[in-house]
Image (cartoon, rainbow, N blue to C red; front, side, top):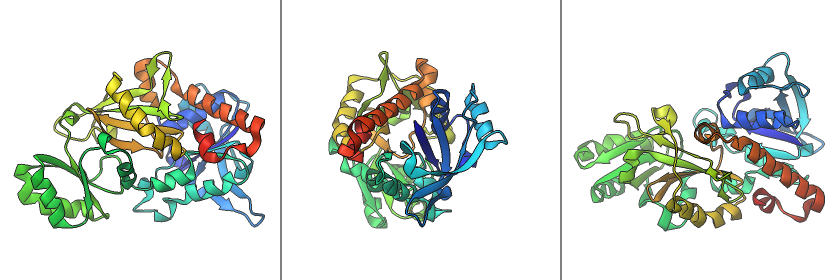
Length: 348
């Protein structure tokens, strides 16, 4: 199998990133795995999509993600211009919100090139058209109200202040962005300072005002969904908890949160089942559901991270099973040709 992994920038990847773990696993299994930055892709005059890609030596077995990535970056690794249209799978793993401020040209380009690659039979996951729908947190509002917190999305200061007064506690965050940046917990005593909070969040566009879920004080759980269903191997789910650290309301790991083992309950599985039809409809192959109590806080469809964290607590190498699922899709394509469109193939 020839598989390309599109990331924001190959040189800023780290060994613990899920994308690197997936590429390393594909490499270990004998596949040709390529890492491609969003700025490394081109549409050539012969109407084929090509990319400047990096890879570890195909004949060398890299034992760890550290040695694998070192070889990708180093002199031993290969740098070549590959024809994307000749790959079996193109996995879009870039995070558009990371480029939203400094490289706005890079936010949607991977999905655009992915859409072109589909014409020649490349399996592109997650589906580029589905990802286009999910280009902001507004996508979250398309899922059933039963699994979402009460939410207002606006730039009007009076509307946002009125919402904050109605709620005992609420959360303000930008419509664009990730990683817990510019996120505020607003309590009744904070109302006098609300103007400054709104100004800070609205600098980058629209503001989300969201009902605060009391269960958030215990952190959240990320549950991975693959092919529309929770990823489960030998009775263990690909999931982990992120627990708040100190007084910081954010549980994101790079915002100070800590990892813990997760217990997946029937409530969590019900949430996954409720969102499954739309994930399948939109061709979402690998997704991270962030669950707080009995509600979803976020659905990460671009580059859900943490498979290594799930492995830490379950002792299951889930990366192996993700690559195995992609292998099966390639086999389906060989058997059936293009009798399935990309959306269907993403979740078969």
